Amino acid sequence: MKLTVSRAVSWRLCAIALACGIAGLASCVAPKPPPPPPPVVVLPPPPVAGHPLSSDSPDFLRLPNLAPGQTPVRVGVILPFGSSTAATRNLAAAMLKAAQLALYDSKNSNIVLITADEGSKPDDAAAAADKLLAQGAEVIIGPLFGPSVSAVAPIARDRAVPVLAFSTEKSVAGNGAYLLSFLPQSEVNRVVAYAASQGHHDFAAMVPQNEYGDVIAGAFADAVKSAGGDSVDVEHFTPSTNAVMAPSGAVAKTKADAVMIAQGGPVLRAIAPSLSFSGLDRDKVKLLGTGLWDDPAIVREDMLLGGWFAAPEPNAVNAFNSRFHDAFGTNPPQLASLAYDAIALVALLSGGQPYHRFTQAALMDPNGFSGVDGIFRFNTDGTSERGLAVLEVAPDGFHVVSPPPKTFQPSAF
Image 1 (cartoon, one colour):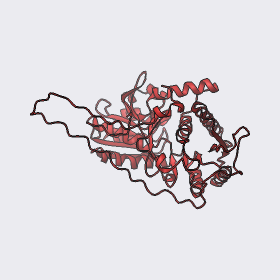
Image 2: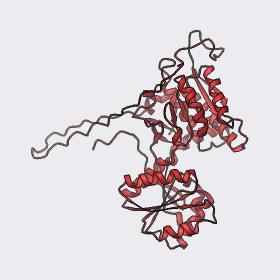
Image 3: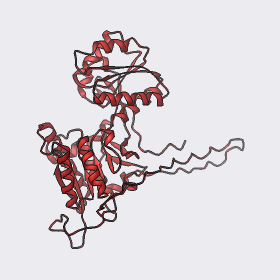
Image 4: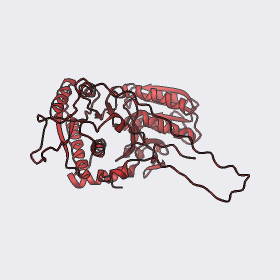
């Protein structure tokens, strides 16, 4: 699979109307009724800009080779390039490379990337936004962290400039801020719904005592209710390998036929045998996970074999990983694909009138968009909805047991 913005028409998803007639049916056979129309999406009113950027200005950044009278697509990129943490700096650098790769693939020489450092404090991110807007950015990509998004969003909103951010904090979305990130709520909804479709009804969960665990607990309750199941127990645990026996024992004693474990790494690999030791029968109880399970190391834990979790289809991202490696000589971190998708989306929408092309209606196209990790679209609250696969843990890796959807349009039949 090759995902390039130069084929934007082919990767924007369109609703396909099916019309077919079958001649010669006996008169006693009633024709199938037409499918119901898709629900009407009512968008909230767009944010009111106090001082909107509505046209080009001589003060804005211009490249020397730009033709007279031509307005470039100025794209601000805010990432923590100068973070005190090496891993965060490396991630920011990789995300910028992914953005540059998307720009190259788009074949759109009219797009200009302008970078600014997210810094370590919300005030730093706000200053970065001011700098980019002063240079004429009509869309901002980033920041990475929730507090930074909260600082940047109102500044950009005052200029009618949308923010395509990477935070996983749902609370910072909306009012012109759109989250491209993988939200744990989507992962929980997908895997719980699939488990219910396979006959599981009584659900329990083990969640860490932290903000992530709180998010999972709320999403789990909503997902189980939506799937028509019963939530029989939610155990909170300190995320430590030495603190999992008691909650594991409590879950094992329930009547649950599906148990979600919202944990990864060494703690997950400690929870699995503790469940077995406590008497949980893997043949009768299906273990469920979140995106934290997307770690090849877990296949070495026998108790997790056969478990399900929601994530992008593994093969979907291979083409991007290969392109990134060929271009830069290293493998990209997982979040790098989000930066690629952000610039690819900008390139797709860049043909409109300058400073009027990245509108709320354009960004919230209900048909969605196709990205590196599959289809996605923005909800009315600024969060993203993604088409995820359900993967099963096997000794040789992860197998797709439920492929991701290819369209957000409802099935006709």
